[in-house]
Image (cartoon, rainbow, N blue to C red; front, side):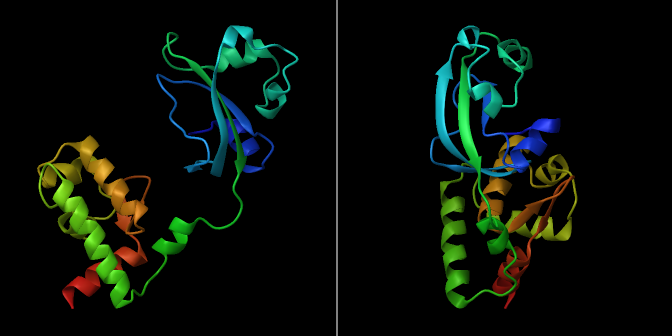
Length: 196
């Protein structure tokens, strides 16, 4: 989920704990933690609501930092035929475990073996063959390069390439930049272990 302007600030401060979204289907799940541009949030509940039945005295309006029901409806984006969801959440304090993982600059032999196993599984399940090591080496060689350019260099479509890089990011091996990617200390340590 992304939050714009004052909503981002309100979520980051823990003052906004609800949001309305118009989606074709729910994009978040109850109990999961999501990284957002306002910090990590844990979803407490997701339910479909009729935006025409939201009342001006609904206490959720305050939690969503909306003046009234009309303000909620005015800010909804997306296809008007899609359902509207009310998402309740809270800010998750403390360090992001993925950032802590990514910051590891040394790996034990067990860490290396675990990563090899996970990456081998990604390669085996891929429709286009082994990709993990080639992608890591390309990002290492060309940090801050547009995803479309990296994908083209590997003969791949951009969208599936970006999804694959996200898998590497979830293992703490890459980091997204404003343009392109770079290896994390953990990603560098993994490639160094492969070369030794």
